[in-house]
Amino acid sequence: MSVRLIERLRRRQIVPAIIGPTASGKTALALALAKRLPVEIISMDSALIYRDMDIGTAKPSNEERAAVPHHLIDILDPAESWSASQFVEAVAALVPQIYGHGRVPLIVGGTMMYYNALVNGLARLPESDPELRRQLQAAWAADPAPLRRELERVDPEAAGRIAPGDPQRTLRALEVYRLTGRPLSELQRDTRPATPYRFAACALLPQDRRWLHRAIAERFDAMLNAGFEEEVRQLYARGDLSTELPSIRSVGYRQMWGWLAGEYDRDTMVKKAVAATRQLAKRQITWLRKLPAQCQMDPYTLSIDEQVTRMMAMLEDLSSVEQNSNIDSDKTK
Image 1 (cartoon, helix red, strand yellow):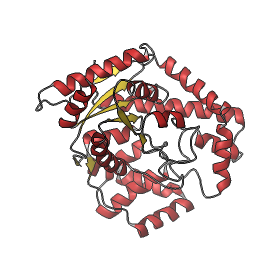
Image 2 (cartoon, one colour; image 1 turned 60 degrees about the horizontal axis):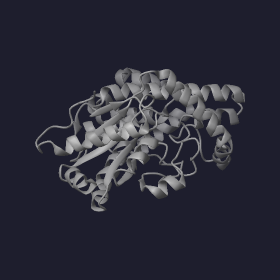
Image 3 (tube, rainbow, N blue to C red; image 1 turned 90 degrees about the vertical axis):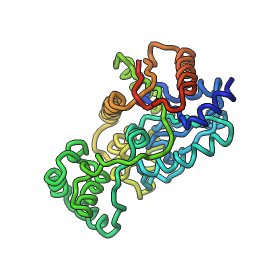
């Protein structure tokens, strides 16, 4: 049965995905699904890409990665950056390779900006200009406030969604404006198809956020017990990393970094980290409600077996429809 299903999915260029907020059980569902269907997991997580950041990212264990092939994990040093366009390019290259192995590519993660780029396309943006970027970085290091005011003036829409303390996205928005004379937010509305594939998502969407909040607090406590502090101390000791980098701005790492820098005590660090993770989950859920999903499940009311059964049924249904049918419409139940 799985061989025929894989062939139907491949022929119709369907790529399944498991998306959801942090601590909602995406990895557990993916690994359980792998027992029913041969898959290779494509990680859609902007933090799992970094080496030496294992505990605070809840990275799949070596045993889990040995049992099921994983991609886009441990591919960058924490000093490097990764973009939505790079993710899309990687997915476009990996999907045919995985189908060629006789397995199903399964996208798993909660970086909703990446999934939005997959299903809604990418904007035609200019390449980064090294000299202009150096000028902007120097200006930010001297005083971020004037650059923030400039962004609010030239692109208020982008300023509304970019945190004041986010240098990477702030400087990119200003760079695009200075290179093109057009706001980044305007250019982002002019998108192009990212890949030839059709993505079929199963969204894990908790109906009672109290369960999610409890899971977030319990998971952070487990991370601390597993040695998260020592992991961050080793990164901190390198000397070439800072909170201006996307890696260190990841939830948990940024708050631990502030504690190591003496900005607040340990109890405050824990509270800040849990609060930041809850805010991340809230943003992810907001994205989820906007993005197309072919099935939706509450991970706290359904067993793993029930979740797998529903996802398998979704894939059977989608792979059996007429080839010209549009599966990209939202069929969330």
